[in-house]
Amino acid sequence: MIEWDRVAELYDIYVQSDIDISFFIRETRKVSGQVLELMAGTGRVSIPLLEAGVSLICVDASEQMLAVLQKKLAQKGLSARIQQADVRELDLEECFELAIIPFNSFSELLSKKDQRNTLRSIHNHLREGGQLICTLHNPNVRSKLVDGSLRLEGKYSLGKEQLLFWGLEKQQQNHCIVERTQFYEIYDQHGFLQSKRLLNMHFCLIKKQEFEEMAQESGYKIVALYGDYSCAEFDSDTSLSMIFILEK
Figure 1 (cartoon, one colour):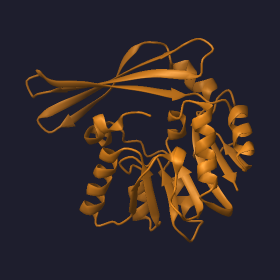
Figure 2 (spheres, one colour; figure 1 turned 90 degrees about the vertical axis):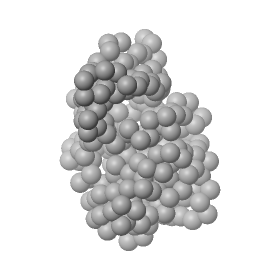
Figure 3 (cartoon, helix red, strand yellow; figure 1 turned 180 degrees about the vertical axis):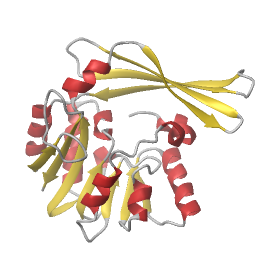
């Protein structure tokens, strides 16, 4: 698993995407009970869902990411149940109508064993007829961006300082695992480097058929597959995402 604790206090600075928020608000409002958000991190999705009136339990393995989320909840006067747990071995002693894994986070599970264990673990926490929304990269599109080049992916203001965020991705030929290194450089107002850190990451580009087979083996039926957050039909050559709706 990725060591998100190393960069938890920086995460919200460089991860600002909201492309999926309207989709998750719409889907979570369909259920009356509490929604299980897995791999919730610092609450990029959690906060707008709570503000929209959705009741959440937010689960993540990173203590520091959840600490950031807890602080944000306090600042905004919001409330959610926070649970530090490994998605591969959930034991929450309750079941839900809906579970979600946003932002392609399932891809952080690298082995087929961990992927299957996670799907089964979530299955055990769904009511009969309950659903799991799992978002994944489309490997046919995402793999084209993996070329071994170091890229400056963003510059972000930190008041008098500035964060430069770099990324480098490598992938062995005919291998589904992407090796990604993220570099974080903080400069003062005069342009002098103050600190630098890196985060080594790996994620798996899971093929559509492989995921479908794992899901069915784990007791799900596939209700829908979207290619983006407007619920467009999935196209294996052009869709950026694979958004699966699975039902127990």
